[in-house]
Image (cartoon, rainbow, N blue to C red):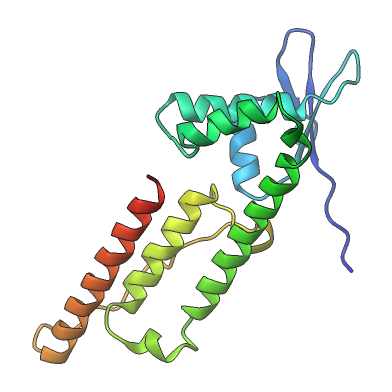
Length: 191
């Protein structure tokens, strides 16, 4: 079993500036957010008191993204989270959220695995574009994290179907219909 790398240690000085101990330079919340999207674990500690401030800063990063219109958490979920702090459900919520995100990552991994080139459907015209779109969707939903905390990079090139191939056009139309249906279902999930 491989050792997991130590978290990136960020120290907060009395001036509230954040210092990256690996690169010996100051960082911003956006830098820390990028480290996390790149698959790094971070630990933020107060230099003077030694208090672990990681949760506080992660919540601040989420709040800043939400305030910029990058809404991932629907209002009803936020309301439920607030309610969970005042009820006995608060002991169940962290485990439920953790299990939910693990299921999302596992589902993403399995779906991407099913869409790989070993899948016979991958040879269909338009499937490569659909796979790339699914990867982009999952990357957006998970903040760029793929299976086991790795960053997902979409393919740079996609094959194009011949304009003269009638079957390719029919298949592409069918795929577009399926994609529209998937998008409709995803829209309904957010409601």
